Amino acid sequence: MGAWLSEPLTWGSALMMFLWGVVFLVILLGFVTYAIYFERKVIGWMQLRIGPNRVGPFGLLQTVADIFKLLIKEDTIPRKADRLLFILAPALAYVPAFAVLVVLPYTQNLYFADLNVGLLYYVALSGISTLAIVIGGWASNNKYALLGGMRSAAQMISYEVPLVISVVGVILLSGSLNLRDIVEAQSGGWFWNWNFLPQLIGFVVFIIAAVSELNRTPFDLPEAESELVAGYHVEYSGFRFAFFMLSEYVYVYAIAALTTVLFLGGWHAPAPFLDFVPGIIWFLLKFVCIVFFLFWIRATFPRIRVDQLMGLGWKVLLPMSLLNVFATAVYLELFIKN
Image 1: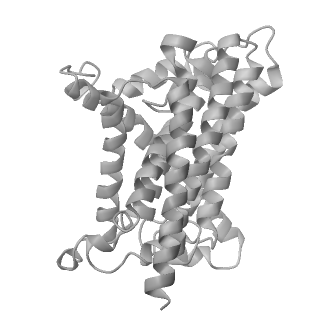
Image 2 (image 1 turned 90 degrees about the horizontal axis):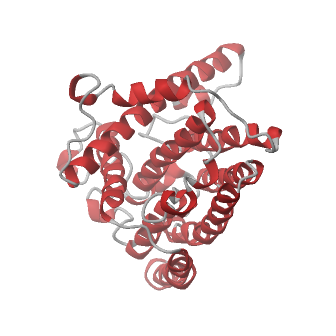
């Protein structure tokens, strides 16, 4: 895929880009559909329940039925809402979520865009979704929605800082912001050459901050059903609500893939004697493990308080991420350059 992307833009290459985009969108929608099913099943098993088991064999069509029901629901807009911003917010939440996926490499030759600043592109674009949540909460003209939007802004700004700083150590070790170069820098042959061990502090900070950025349990305060009756999207229904849900699970996909690329060696095998297995298989195995871990957290941890959330971000994760950068810089100066 990467070969024809480097060719001059023609009508043929533009058509190929469009078709690949459509194919990838279909794959992504399939992932979201069955990630929701898988999440409900996993949480059900962990809580000694059955989970979806009625619609289709083993309940496999339950999420399809839920999505169909959601799409045919009446689309309502509150009378006193800011109509333009109310309509714009769901699209503004989804578009950056889909756009960040373009820089994620899956194998040496399977990628969409090979940007020299791919990691910076990801971080910059993913932050736009915060604006969508704030806009949706404000435009709804609902106090609960506004509270959810403001919580989300405070939470995402607080955790975006340690999230970005936590990957600076990875950038220092690889010497590049290009995601393919970062994966290649972990190609020593054995799994202990992957970044999750030499960058253990950064890896832990990244995972915690990523869960918060996803607004998932135990950091799902912007949606806290018991406090804010669903938070920023309380006034949304039908396909507009579906866009918010879609963007959330697309970011689950993006974070799982980014974690695989930055810390788990991407498509590289954990040992040299396993190199005969195709790289895409290793990437998908690591990717699925991260997705399962996110679902496992939701089934395990209770929601924390707002003050605990902010304290963790500013008093714990931020100093830890700065310490990780300092330690990495000292290591490179003392042991690598000399």
